[in-house]
Structure formats: structure tokens, C-alpha cells
Length: 159
Image (cartoon, rainbow, N blue to C red):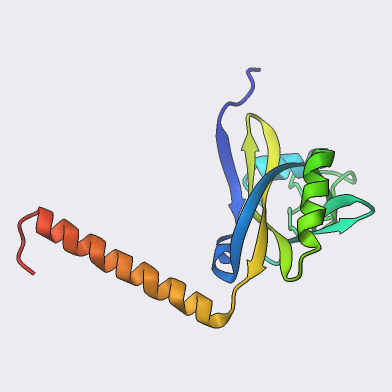
């Protein structure tokens, strides 16, 4: 059977970009069991409340929900188990150095298949304050209004 090509997104964490300012992103593999991969291929996963943390010099993904595989037997996995992220030692050391700074955390942004391999995109993030969120919403609304005005002007419509 030919190997898959391209990128197929399984789950994305839309709330993360609203709640955090993403400073840097990393692509990491995940150590998964067979039924977890089958469940992911069926498009079933949730990143709500998920986070990444360092333990024993490695990075682990906590609270990511991959539901049990429907056709699985007694070998099925636990839905919210802790999963090891597969990163190069240099990337792990760089991440751990940045995490020592106050206020930074690792947040999973997307789970996807890249050329047949299950990957997670994690972001080095700093939490936003409520006024930062309001400023972002106001900026997005202003940009949308500008785009509408430009579109109307391009079509020759009066304002």
C-alpha cells in the first residue's frame, strides 16, 4: 500500500491562540499505541485542557483525549494517558532553557498526520491578560472593516 503524502489535520486547539501569545512552534512526534493511531486516523481527538510538561529530561503531553478505538479489544488504550513527545535532544534542551523563564508554558496547537506519521505541533506560549484579548479582538474587527471598505471601493460601490 502506498504511503500517505501531505498533511491531514486531526484536531486543532483554537482556544490556545486566543488565550496565549505563541512565541515559537515545534513539531514533535508522539509515542502512541496501535489503537491510538487507528483512533486518530478516524479523526477522533481533543486537545481541550491538554498541556506539555518536562519530566526526567523529556517532554510529555498530558490530558490529550484520544477516545478508545471502536473495533479495539482488551488491548485498547486509556483515553487520557500521558504520551511522550519525540524531539531531538537539542530541541529539548532549547525548550527546557526557555521554559525556565517565568510565565512560559508548552501548549499543543494541532495534531496531524504528516506523510503518514502522527505529529503534534506544540507552541512555546505566554499567557495573555484579559485586556490583551480585548485588544486582539478590536484589532481583528478593525482589520475586517478595512478589508470590507477596500472591497466595496474596488467594486465601485459608494460608502
